[in-house]
Amino acid sequence: MRGSIVVRTRWGALFALVFLVSGPARGEDFDGDGLDDRDEIEYYETHPGEADTDNDGLEDGEEVDEHETDPTEKDTDGDGYDDGEEIDEGSDPNDPESVPRD
Image (tube, rainbow, N blue to C red; front, side, top):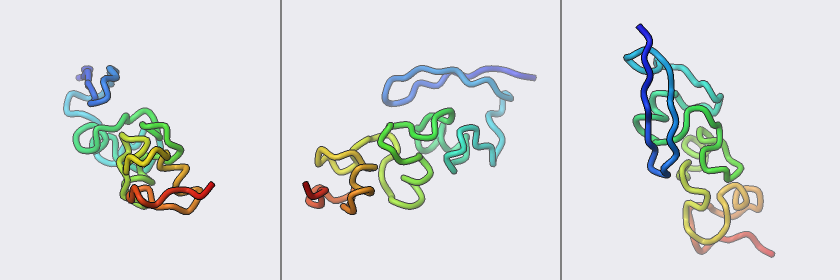
């Protein structure tokens, strides 16, 4: 039996996912970001259809597994620089005192 679920994420985007009533199967990764679709919905509150939910230049799985940044916030440490920019420039996206050099 197929059904649909409407999920409202914390950033307010509304989208529908069509899958088995029990939810996506473990191990499914529709967007290829390295995070299990079910974990994206239930735990991380990321979009299982977008590899980079917050559009900061880092895929959600990369943020969670490699950099320990928030995949739903472009600027995890609130210093005014996107996480992807900080990684590219060699600064720490988790430390507001560490910023890219101009």
